[in-house]
Length: 366
Image (cartoon, rainbow, N blue to C red):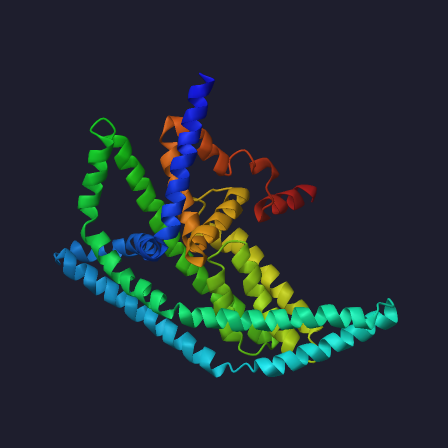
């Protein structure tokens, strides 16, 4: 019995390893395909609304995809124009960083008594490493341009065929599941379609709201290029936890390197992003996206790390809805229900920190 269990576990781990290896090796093909699946879910309500008016499915899909390309392309051109006006002289930034480091060294030497030669060695290495990493990242960006353009070009093609053959795909899944499981399979597909569509559309609305809040706040504080930093922080918010931190860190680093007295502005930026993040977690996302995902933070963080390891940034963007789909499937399969419970947020409601819970406690005390 034990040997049989060990053999089954080893076989499952081997199959999982082969599957992960396949995902990594076929990254350039699978990444645009996976992104296209979620774009198809996002565009499906519009396509179906046009089809119901008697328009041919192919024409309806083409019209919706062209409209989406027009909107995304216009937004991309607008942001590119703003970025082109945002001239950053890295040589000047390096000189300013060196001057700030010299000032910090003098403070540490007079206040704490640290050897200036030791500090100069480590600070110089850190500065060179920072700017050399920027140069290497820019170089890798240009080297990956061809592959990226190829993947972007595949997105509308994949999306078109996924929408066009959606009925055929559903019948294929029904045949795989068998007649006995047809009702359960239909239930799973409907749940996946509902949650994915609501999550993707809600996410776009949240990004739009956050872009307005971030840009307005940075403009009031007086940060240059507030629009660029505000939109960038909103887009980075698509990656939970990590994206929010990076989105707030970028304007902080920019102010630190370009301003002569940055600390008051940095504090204001920190307060701004803390308030926006609190509003996003407790008011905006629950009301716009809803609480259909319901996955605990530990599972989200681990899945983000795994998604980054396998597919990089695209993996981090799509891993949350993939995890939600996986949870739906596991909830409807008795043997996998314990795993669905493990990654869900059930069992932790009594310990969670929320605006509603804090407000309830305050009102009770009064």
